[in-house]
Each structure stands twice: as structure tokens, then as C-alpha cells.
Image (cartoon, rainbow, N blue to C red; front, side, top):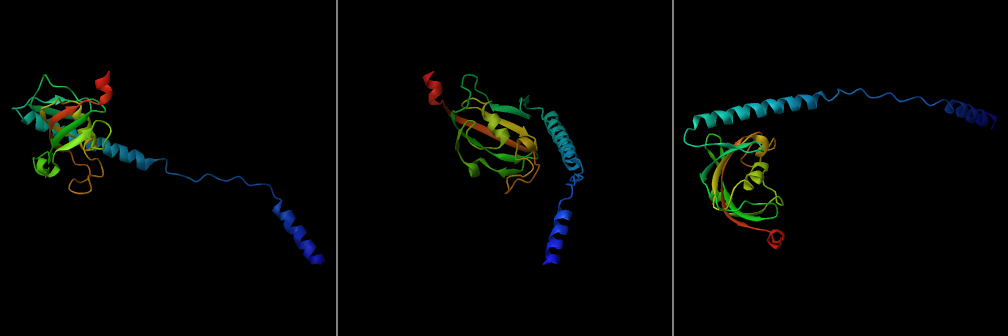
Length: 182
């Protein structure tokens, strides 16, 4: 019994030591993220250079730069039509091609779609482009990969980091009820 009491006393003395501070785990300082950002900047610069070369070689069309990182030209322009705004329901068709004009998805494959502006998922470039076009306009857009399907692709036919060309046709713009009431 005395041994048990002495053992418990000894254990309690050992357990009562001062707390030892924890040492921080050494980390690499985010070098992977920095390298990834740098790699993405270089990729974007290469894609933009490639698109600008395509534009320079195309003497038949006048390209405009959107404020969102895409370039486009009109195939059919309508100065009188209305522009799509958030909440509007837009009926449109589009295709997706490589920058070398190889068809990835044709207009027939995609079909005519209805898109509620800024409320549904489309790839970023298409979401922005719809707001630049009027009813009955057709335009061709060139997108860098971040404005297209980014570093994941569409997990079907479009690989990661693929810049694309899209021809968009706006068939109808139905104003939202909020805008009609105002």
C-alpha cells in the first residue's frame, strides 16, 4: 500500500511540470501558390499574344476589345435593338471552336437555349458577351482560357487551359418584369 501511495505521489510530481510551449511547424511559405500564379500569368500572356496574332492576320473583320478580356467582331449588327441586362431572359444559340477553327461543339449540338442573364451558369466569357449584344445580332468572340472553361475544361471535349472561339446569335431578349414595371 505504501508503495502505491509513493508511486502515485511520484507520478503527480512528474505530471506537475511547467507547460512546454509548442513549436511552430515549418512551412514552405506558399511557394507552390506563387509558382502557380506565375505560371498562370505566363499562360495568359501566351494566349493573349496568340489571339492578337489571329486578329492581326484577319484583315476582313474589325475586332473590338471587351472590357472583360475577350475580343470580338460583328457578323450581323443591329444598332436599333435592345441590350440584355441582368434578369432578362435571352434566347440564343452559339458554337464553340478552337482558335484554329476546329469545331468542338456546333450550334446544332448545343441547340437554342434560354438564359436568364447573370442568374444561370454559362462559362464566364459567354455570360459577359451576352450583355454586349443586341437582339438579332451575331458576333464571334475570342476568349482566353480563364474566360472560357479555365484550368478544368468542360470535362468532356474541352481540355484544361484551352482558349476558344465562339459565334453567338441573340435571337430574342425578353425584359424582366421588374424592368417593364419601372
